[in-house]
Length: 95
Image 1 (cartoon, rainbow, N blue to C red):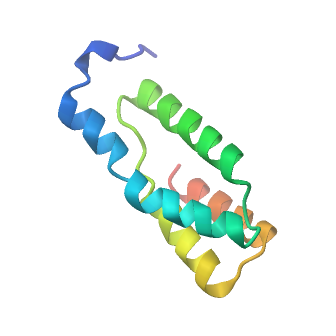
Image 2: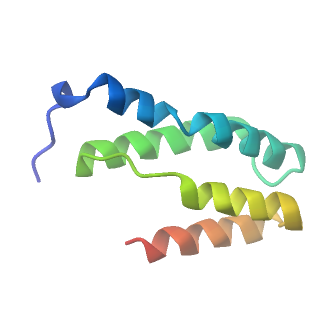
Protein backbone atom coordinates (compact mmCIF):
# COMPACT_ATOMS: atom_id res chain seq x y z
CA UNK A 1 0.00 0.00 0.00
CA UNK A 2 1.53 3.32 -1.06
CA UNK A 3 1.58 6.14 1.46
CA UNK A 4 0.12 9.41 0.15
CA UNK A 5 2.39 12.42 -0.19
CA UNK A 6 2.20 14.78 2.76
CA UNK A 7 2.70 17.75 0.45
CA UNK A 8 -0.94 17.58 -0.67
CA UNK A 9 -2.22 18.99 2.63
CA UNK A 10 -3.91 22.34 2.02
CA UNK A 11 -4.80 25.03 4.53
CA UNK A 12 -8.51 24.15 4.26
CA UNK A 13 -7.76 20.49 5.06
CA UNK A 14 -5.61 21.48 8.03
CA UNK A 15 -8.27 23.82 9.40
CA UNK A 16 -10.93 21.16 8.84
CA UNK A 17 -8.85 18.64 10.76
CA UNK A 18 -8.80 21.02 13.74
CA UNK A 19 -12.44 22.04 13.42
CA UNK A 20 -13.75 19.27 15.66
CA UNK A 21 -11.65 20.37 18.63
CA UNK A 22 -14.24 22.99 19.61
CA UNK A 23 -16.75 20.28 20.47
CA UNK A 24 -14.47 17.33 21.14
CA UNK A 25 -12.34 18.89 23.88
CA UNK A 26 -15.30 20.05 26.06
CA UNK A 27 -16.84 16.58 25.78
CA UNK A 28 -13.54 14.97 26.78
CA UNK A 29 -13.21 17.35 29.74
CA UNK A 30 -16.73 16.46 30.87
CA UNK A 31 -16.04 12.74 30.58
CA UNK A 32 -12.78 13.15 32.50
CA UNK A 33 -14.59 15.02 35.26
CA UNK A 34 -17.05 12.18 35.81
CA UNK A 35 -14.26 9.59 35.64
CA UNK A 36 -15.19 7.86 32.39
CA UNK A 37 -11.84 8.57 30.67
CA UNK A 38 -8.36 9.83 31.43
CA UNK A 39 -8.02 13.11 29.54
CA UNK A 40 -4.35 13.06 28.45
CA UNK A 41 -4.27 9.47 27.11
CA UNK A 42 -7.58 10.04 25.31
CA UNK A 43 -6.23 13.12 23.53
CA UNK A 44 -2.88 11.51 22.79
CA UNK A 45 -4.17 8.24 21.38
CA UNK A 46 -7.05 9.94 19.57
CA UNK A 47 -4.51 12.16 17.83
CA UNK A 48 -2.15 9.29 17.05
CA UNK A 49 -4.88 7.17 15.49
CA UNK A 50 -6.29 10.13 13.55
CA UNK A 51 -2.84 10.78 12.05
CA UNK A 52 -2.38 7.07 11.26
CA UNK A 53 -5.73 6.79 9.49
CA UNK A 54 -4.93 9.94 7.55
CA UNK A 55 -1.58 8.54 6.45
CA UNK A 56 -2.90 5.08 5.58
CA UNK A 57 -6.12 6.03 3.77
CA UNK A 58 -5.30 9.62 2.80
CA UNK A 59 -8.26 11.03 4.74
CA UNK A 60 -8.51 11.58 8.51
CA UNK A 61 -11.37 9.74 10.18
CA UNK A 62 -14.20 11.87 11.48
CA UNK A 63 -14.85 11.96 15.21
CA UNK A 64 -18.63 12.45 15.07
CA UNK A 65 -19.36 8.89 16.27
CA UNK A 66 -17.07 9.43 19.26
CA UNK A 67 -18.79 12.75 20.05
CA UNK A 68 -22.14 10.94 20.07
CA UNK A 69 -20.80 8.31 22.47
CA UNK A 70 -19.36 11.06 24.69
CA UNK A 71 -22.68 12.91 24.81
CA UNK A 72 -24.53 9.72 25.79
CA UNK A 73 -21.86 8.86 28.38
CA UNK A 74 -22.29 12.29 29.96
CA UNK A 75 -26.10 12.29 29.82
CA UNK A 76 -26.62 8.71 31.02
CA UNK A 77 -23.55 8.39 33.27
CA UNK A 78 -22.00 5.43 31.46
CA UNK A 79 -19.17 3.60 33.19
CA UNK A 80 -15.68 3.19 31.72
CA UNK A 81 -16.55 -0.34 30.58
CA UNK A 82 -19.77 0.78 28.91
CA UNK A 83 -18.02 3.68 27.16
CA UNK A 84 -15.23 1.39 25.97
CA UNK A 85 -17.75 -1.14 24.69
CA UNK A 86 -19.65 1.57 22.81
CA UNK A 87 -16.49 2.88 21.18
CA UNK A 88 -15.32 -0.62 20.21
CA UNK A 89 -18.66 -1.57 18.71
CA UNK A 90 -18.79 1.76 16.86
CA UNK A 91 -15.34 1.30 15.41
CA UNK A 92 -16.06 -2.32 14.46
CA UNK A 93 -19.18 -1.33 12.53
CA UNK A 94 -17.18 1.11 10.33
CA UNK A 95 -14.67 -1.56 9.25
